[in-house]
Amino acid sequence: NSNNVNSLRVASSASIAALELADIDWDNLRFGLMPTDYMYIMRCSQGEAFSKGQLQRFGNIELSPSAAVLNYGQGLFEGLKAYRKHDGNISLFRPEENGVRLRMGAERMCMPAPTVEQFVEAVKETVLANERWIPPPGKGSLYIRPLLMGSGAVLGLAPAPEYTFLIYVSPVGNYFKEGLAPINLIVETEMHRATPGGTGGVKTIGNYAAVLQAQSAARAKGFSDVLYLDSIDKKYLEEVSSCNIFVVKGNEISTPAIKGTILPGITRKSILDVARSQGFEVAERQVTVNELLEADEVFCTGTAVVVSPVGSITYLNKRVTYGSDGVGRVSQLLYSALTSLQMGLTEDKMGWIVEL
Ligand code: COI
Image 1 (cartoon, protein in one colour):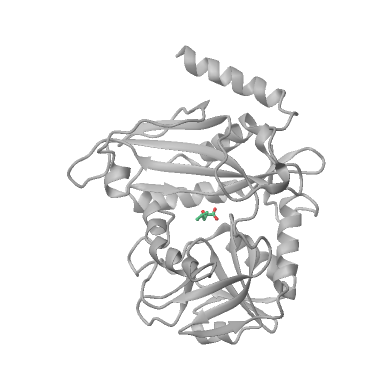
Image 2 (tube, helix red, strand yellow):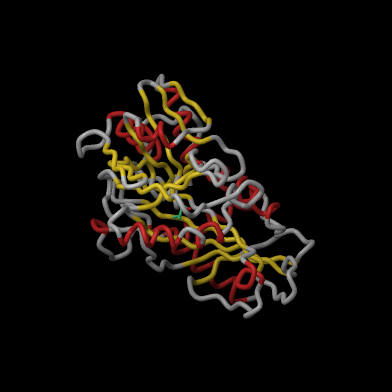
């Protein structure tokens, strides 16, 4: 319809004339929603494939009160980032990995999903339409949030008759209020994030609502976030509410193996490769809470948190600190290696960067 054509035309002229940045305080970005210009929407019915999406002005969407996503949590999200490089070009970090992960999650949640190619194209279109919101180099990034949801109405428990794929974006800075300073975590001993056979290994929205209670309690006590243990033996590390966890001992860098209860993070996977290429021994295995307490360094990884050093862990009223206040050597090295690659400051030998 003519509305779609209009918004597409506005979007493309906006991207051509987007050299002027949005008028905001680029020096004080936090990880919070800042409404931008456009969002991307694509819909399809159950049993059909997504075919054609469109950009439209960013704003509220209309849903039936009985939409499956609202009633039964039939929804997934993704997270990735676009960077403005010093040469003025814009890049994405491994967007096809998010497209693949969305498809895996969609299978688990009984939803149709865009193809990886459709996903990457939609991400590119959305980023270009919002180009003026991409922070200047070194000031942050444009966080891209794709959503896939059962938007059709249901009452009895069943997959929705209609699905919506949506992408919105927001300029962001550091995730934790500590910035790059080490964060303080508490090990949760009562509640669990995921159970074997459950949905911990996919990025479904319910996994994130389920951690809010423990997270809020931890924050009220002054901790940055919660580290979860496995629900069977209650001694193996799983992950933090919003990121994966790594422990460093000597030359070995270990992280819990993917076994259905841990989110297969793209930053996690990238850090494993970067660490390997830097000569570290890298292990994906079961990591005990005792090893955590005896580690030389601990850090978290995620798209939103990037590489976040951990300054202390509290477990059963015992507090262990790592290093002296500053960022550990290995955490710093991996943080620098990853972010300089993402920002285009070092050569992309891995083929991870997609230029727009
Ligand atoms: C991300 O790191 O992109 C995530 O999806 C975690 C989210 C809780 C911010």
